[in-house]
Length: 367
Picture 1 (cartoon, helix red, strand yellow):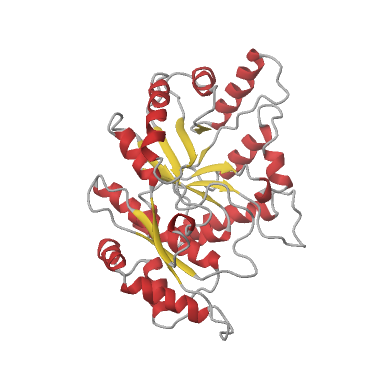
Picture 2 (tube, rainbow, N blue to C red; picture 1 turned 90 degrees about the vertical axis):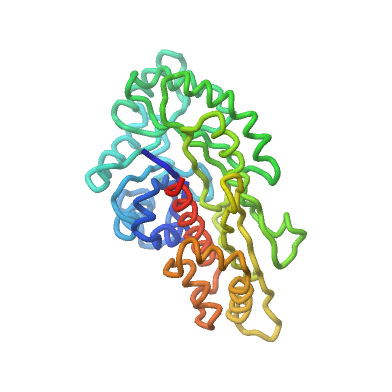
């Protein structure tokens, strides 16, 4: 049974963070990878299976492993390429997607794909059901992922799947602003009830409260934190539905652009805080340090930020909880000691992901 589902795009930052997880953490999670394009490569043929898209899957196989994983396709245009758009075409029951998934099952025997749903080019209800029922049968065990406002969710589940072969439902709340976790939970409860009413037994509730700029909620200060509202939402719903499964975006903003940084940034290092009790949501804290005009690189600023983190009592508690052998912990400590491990925002996104997923997996393994 799934206990924790982190949703991750297959960009460099996400893959670096999750592939650096300890093996026991990997065994305690089921990541849902959203397939994205690779970085531009003039020698690669963008639309072919052996081109940039498949390189991401090869990296998962090589650096993460071939255990139980979910697979989806990104819906963000900036992260798509021609091959992803081909897989998203509703031709003959998403035949390109079904064929691609089935070729991957030779490498990933426990792969759980997401069912693609669309009424594009379909003019009758009977045809809509026929197409997706055919797709579901060909995919086998799969996930049905939908946003909270998706009106045909219950209809789809009741008509696409045979009794006893229901999908894992991923109920995606998307972005959750600060202080909105409980409010959104109240809206979700009747939706969860209707899904359980179809006979589905596995429902994952996912979302992300990590903003595009984490300093915004902290008045632009160089230190601050953002409460994990996705955890608050989940804990509130779990009171009514104790078998509900937790999911999140692994501290990523749900709708990022293709850019990871820019021509200038303020070096920042994030880390999760440990909940003090079962009702504590936890938060993502940060420290940052501006680059001085006399400095020729970002290295001194990252060192100052890392030292601020190292001096933070919340970080000490994190080390006590997950251990100092953790990859993300080691990057922060090494940087604080003067070993400049990573000098880009992308690298420190990886560290944040690694720390958060490790802590969340440990929390759910203890519960």
